[in-house]
Image 1 (cartoon, rainbow, N blue to C red):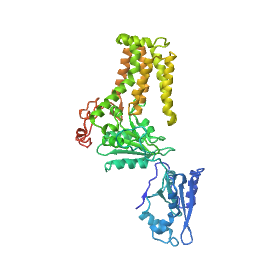
Image 2 (image 1 turned 45 degrees about the vertical axis):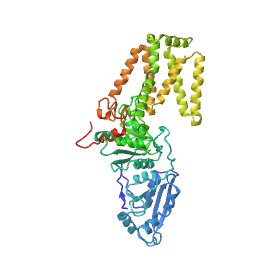
Image 3 (image 1 turned 45 degrees about the horizontal axis):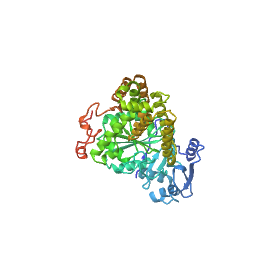
Image 4 (image 1 turned 135 degrees about the vertical axis):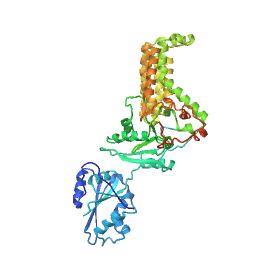
Amino acid sequence: MAPTTSTPPSSVAFPLALSLEENRKWIEQQLANCSDICYQPRFFGAELQYGALVVYCDSLINDKELIFLKNVLQDLVFQEAGFDATTIELNKLISFIENHGVSSRNVTIIDQLPIAEQNILLGQVVIFLDQWNKALCFNALTLESRQISEPMNEPVVRGPQEATVESLRINLGLLRNRLKSANFKIEKFNASGETRTEIAVGYLEGTVNPRTLSEFKTRFERSIQEEILEVAYIEELIEDSTYSPFPQYRHTERTDTAVAALLDGKIIVLTSGSPSIMICPGLFIEFFQSSEDYYIRSLYSSLIRLLRLFAFIMALTLPSLYIAISTFHSELIPTVLLLAILDTREGIPFPAFIEALLMEFFFEIMREAGIRLPKPVGSAVSIVGALVIGQAAIEAKIASPIMVIIVALTGIASFSLPNYNMAISLRILRFPLMILAASLGGFGFMIGFLFIFLHLVSLRSLGQPYLKPWAPLIMNQLKDGFVRAPLKILLRSPRNRHRPNRSKK
């Protein structure tokens, strides 16, 4: 295949010199004290009068690629050009490479030293020839990665059991295998700074909203000027409201979820070294949906989605409701239940608010400990810790049994949400609601709930209303909300395509 020529970056240009020694000195100076950078001199010609230098990063290339490097110049001279290595002239070899390239490898011709340095650190093999002010680059990056396995954070009973890995190339291959369409566009970028992380942006042309895509690219171009280690860095740099407790973009490690989002007009972002796929924009309703909802009957999935909504409300409001009712509105509690609560609270030295605050605080500590501990002991410690501490708190008259039940139900309800980031937002909002309920009772609880609702209405994700399709109300998109219509209705509905004369508002 014919070679392509890379253009230098907009920074100060350092063109390659004709002297092989000058080019080597520049590269060695830039990559000084990098012990994994290898320099292999090569010679060819009738009297070995022509010199060459092969430079690569040994830690990014495996043994198979090293075997290729041993014979790379012989392949260039004999197998590709058809010349005898003992009689070849340098000008003929250069002319052949510039006009025909190398068919056995994807080759790029560069003419800038900074690009050569960057390509070496990206896992490419760079070949310098004496008396030639250009260089050849071969992609030879072969990092080891873990095998494709089941999704760890998004398990399902029915559906594909395929999760992404840390290799960007493998992840893009998994997505392309599921979405075999020429409209599936993938654009690659490299972050600035020291990391130079490889980033891929994917979207389905003709389905994605052009204005949303344009807004994303504007923000994205600014974000990649920073140091990027993981896709979460990009999320925080391009989100609409940095201090909002609600997540504005979704993350998944399931390829079927990512492809379904692409078909729905979303934009996905992947980075090398991370199995996470960011989906944007992210709407409120989408954080309650799971890929398994489309692999079971619509009646079941609708009931499960409504159950998740109820769990969300319960995890957000249950402690504060108990504090408000037991402290300010005890007349709303039936007499028998009120007497039972008073009997369990007998001897408790703290008011309901302090009791709930302490129990929630200890529960959050146990939850965090269960996550950070090794898997074989993490679940056991969290379960045993909750049982032991709960029972000990009741016997020591620090907490009442009803409070332990409420805190446990709140935690279980938050676990039922399919998206971890949305569960984190509940953990943040729960405490302000408890403070308002302890201060003003039911009135304070309603004020807090109203502020949360107003924030949700005003919040936007990549310029899109967060509560869409309810605010604003879009009737034809309500088929896949908290109640899912049967697939024969969803699949027969018109595709959400954005044409110049039919743009979705």
